[in-house]
Amino acid sequence: MAQFSRIQASSDATSASASNSNPKVVVTRERGKNGKLIKALAKHRIDCLELPLIQHAQGPDTDRLSSVLKDTIFDWIIITSPEAGSVFLEAWKEAGTPNVRIGVVGAGTASIFEEVIQSSKCSLDVAFSPSKATGKILASELPKNGNKKCTVLYPASAKASNEIEEGLSNRGFEVVRLNTYTTEPVHHVDQTVLKQALSIPVVAVASPSAVRSSWVNLISDTEQWSNSVACIGETTASAAKRLGLKNAYYPTHPGLEGWVDSILEALREHGHF
Image (tube, rainbow, N blue to C red):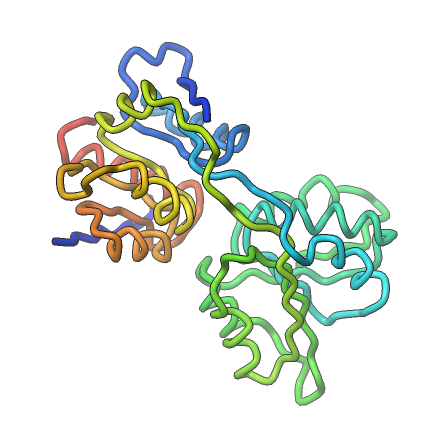
């Protein structure tokens, strides 16, 4: 059982479960990427309502990534989200599948590479993940090759903070960051479904952007909305707290299992499970 914590602070959407008679959780990732969470919650007989809040778009450096991979050898390539992994894999294939050594932030991100790694001729090695799935811990634990120059390529969201490259640079790594994708709010939210979502006990969010740019903007008055937010990790929960959301839950160790446990705890505490 994963540990969890609680923080207290003063498009078209469709239902996404078989029966959906009484959804208790709103899932908010980009359409098509909520399946694992929906399936995990279904094992606990919890129905979900799918309300995608964000969508991914190309970043300013998307087109540069494949050429950088062709022209430069890096000691490490750091991948910190499934979307960053998907964008990277496409560019890596365009570059001719060069030999690369990957560091990932956690198991969810690592899973993006499973199919490629199963290839007998794979030139991609997922060689590191930190003891805790956060960017700060990754930057503090990434192995360094003695005193020699150690280079890192960091394909990231344009909205990601500078925490990772600053942490690595402070340890003597030479970091090249490319903003290969970005997140933005969905262009249309069905108001009927939004009204239903506002009454559901728990909203599950997977990034600060989903909280900051999307959910909070959809709530006319956060003081009047008192349901719970179950966050995939501490960074997202901290964003929820700063924005005044009253009940934010998050796992001590980010990942799907911990996220589910945090959702269950939010439901239990308010008498919904």
